[in-house]
Image (cartoon, rainbow over all chains, first blue to last red; front, side):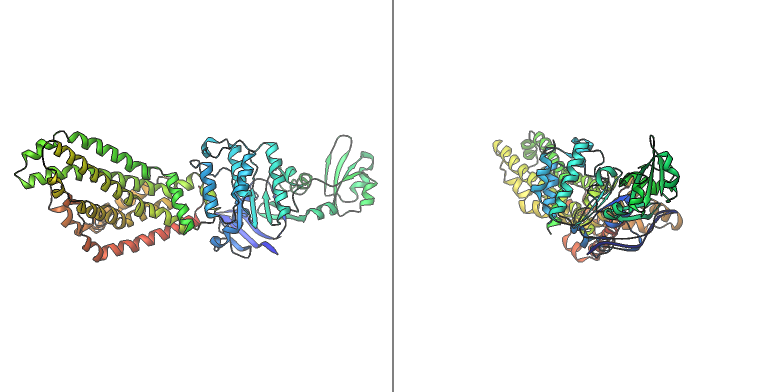
Length: 288
Length: 285
């Protein structure tokens, strides 16, 4: 079942084109990483999916138009489009009461269990928390909502390493309990790549790469090539090349694995390597 | 219904002035009133033979109490409205509220119900409660000074306290003022900064332009109608210069039967639907 489907999705702000005709299909049971340089259109795309922005073209989330049918849709999706948006005046206990009162998919016990691993107290106000703690609170709430589609835009901004790991572990174990659709946009690709099932690269408002992680593993190979074999390696049309210490790192798409093995040590490229190889040339100076 | 209930609770969590301001107002009124008690027996005795004067002496503190509490009511309601749909966009918390399954319509209805229903009802309860306490306390003081407190209860019957306050606070400041609050909420949903100026300057500009260009004052008349009840209210405030509860009495029948109330309610609905639309279209700032 396709949970998110877009055809020719476009969004412009004045003369700035944020989304330049995006087509995508995301099925139930996928965890999709939306990766792109700053200003590529990630947030605009996610905002369109959760009905926070209007758009041109076609978009269906759980079979509904998120802009015109937002009210009917919103109870089935969970999202964080920005981590710093919890109202500062509210008490932690109040926000839990509120969500428990109105959200039929919210499991308060689960949120409290999540919070018990933090130093957040229910009697505190949001404004008394540090930035990272506000993020922890927001994640605790969203993770306790049994949403069919979960959209996370930089969910771990400002979190320490341990909590980031804990969060992704929790996300994955939840997902294994009950498959749903998760879309994550983040710059911390190395932390999400082990939880993703699919990879989308977005650049200048267009999807420039869309593969499942299995496809990435089977199609893409990185080879550490010794300088004396560099000539024959280059003859196989690598899609990217960079210098390492005492060798060059070449990336190949769809090349014969046995042949590559003769050139040097082979490995599956990381998402970061792939991103730099595919987007780095297009967007000069763009960083992850 | 459930989401409306939680939305209203949410407003009370955020805007504690809705219930704290009347409490503080009551405290101030009662403090001031207790000072006036020292001279009350003497003044009542002196005026015992002049019913008009006696009427005034008894009623002035009650009217003053009502006016102070109404003033607090209006200030709280106006500033609440201006911030209601503006503040959440400015601090970006709208992104959190919008991730919750509450429609823009429910949100706007919950926010409109605060100045139109809740604040007037709380003010009504606070005013009636305060005036009742004032009656009890001054009765005790009069009785203690050998003056029959029955004068008080004749001049200030409880039934009058309830009906006059209900008419003025709940019907007039709540329902009749609905277009005013709806306008403020609309501006609050629309403005990207300075909602107070956006709410007040355009009407002021229309007043001036109309005056200069056409030398007429239809818009001023409209504003007067909205704010003081226009010609209907002449009967209410025009002829009576003395401070008695009569001056707060709203001609209830005229209100309900006249077209003004219904035109006002329809205008309010249009403005509030505009605010719903704006909340849908406009995100965080």
